[in-house]
Length: 262
Image (cartoon, rainbow, N blue to C red; front, side, top):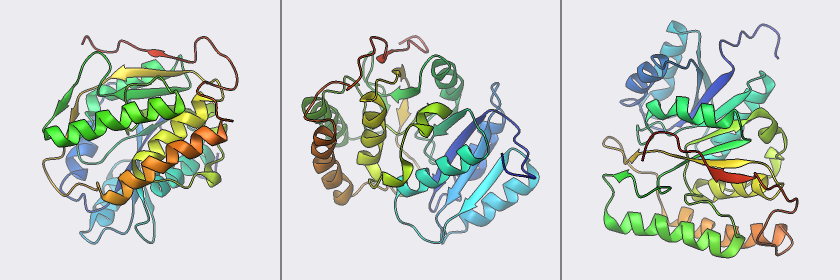
């Protein structure tokens, strides 16, 4: 752990932000009120709307809130990698990925954390035990479901929601990844990290969550994000030696955690 740094909790929630000034304060309040305490790291990409300044103000008021400022906006994946490195340097045992726009429900954090205690990675799934997506047009839902089927077809990963971005990593899982070698962003970033752990035989479980599309701000979805994901899965398949299963057999490497009742 770095000298002079006081870690309040064993879990850290990494929230990348870009123009989320309206969402960040209420999100911070929800996270601070959780029955399972966790620290918050805001990774802000120099938001022109002042999100970084608001994050600094919150950090000054609450010792469990921290801010990492980045000089430019260069992708969700790069923001998470910076946050993961920050977390590892400071000794956190559980590290979350979470969107800053309330599409992920803070109330699901205790369920994901509990699942991660018996796994290497807990995936929040919108599709296990049925579809739980709010405020999406049918075209967006079909794109997401089609992406999941495509990933399964090429890579063999058995997960229902490989592009989801609500996750909890164990420290040992992040340490098993070469974070500097990860180059993808967006959907493909989520797929790549899960695949790298799954193909090593690490235990990955899915936890049912409810996903609500943002009501404030603009979506970060773009054609480039979709195109990157299309070719990324082929690269992962090649990296795994044309296998559609883990290199190291582990009967408990994947599964479903029931979480809340479906």
